[in-house]
Amino acid sequence: MIHVNEIRKIGPRIAASLTTRGNSGGYPHPTIGQLKAMLTLRQLRYLDALARHGHFGRAAEECSVSQPALSMQISELEKELGTKLVEHRQGATALTEIGHEVARRAANILSATRDLADSAHRSARPLSGPLHVGIIPTLAPYVLPRFLPELQRRYPELHLELIESQTRTLLGELRRGALDVLLLALPVKLRRRTAAGATTHFLR
Image 1 (cartoon, rainbow, N blue to C red):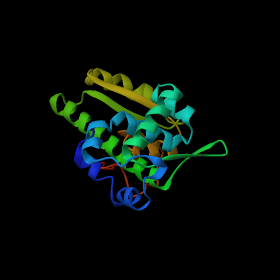
Image 2: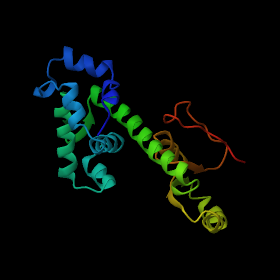
Image 3: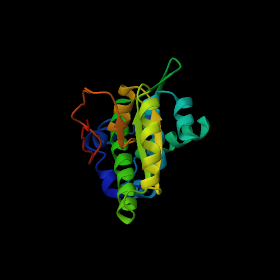
Image 4: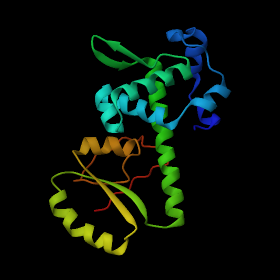
């Protein structure tokens, strides 16, 4: 469950939507107590996937659930927040203005949650647990065979999860907190804004 303080951080724009737009989508206005009881990380994760893919089917595939199950959870989230987050336009799926704001804040909450879990795990057992590494295809055949065996030998409790993709995609995943380390070809242009608590270091 999401802590009530995180719900309050959803922000003045959502509060304005609930008070000035007047029960958008026909949903009853929720109380803070109701939000505390019903809002879940799973719902935020589904919304985050939908915001990135712009398609219910692809979002459901990423989340390893059926499309109806994901759609139902998004609908429940809309009811719990008391506002419309998603709208359908000529067969396409788009977030509403307030939907974009909720999705942006949901991504920050999910990133902070992952960071919390990783920090606790690594504090108990340094250099153990999952490490999400992104690498570009041109480097993978040359770099991975050289450093993976040695890394596994030195840190057997470290579980690497590799994603091979293009630089732009990997940077996007880094910004949202889904990746911990990137192996890229320099130079790389980074936006100033990254996930909460993230730091950037270049190793040459």
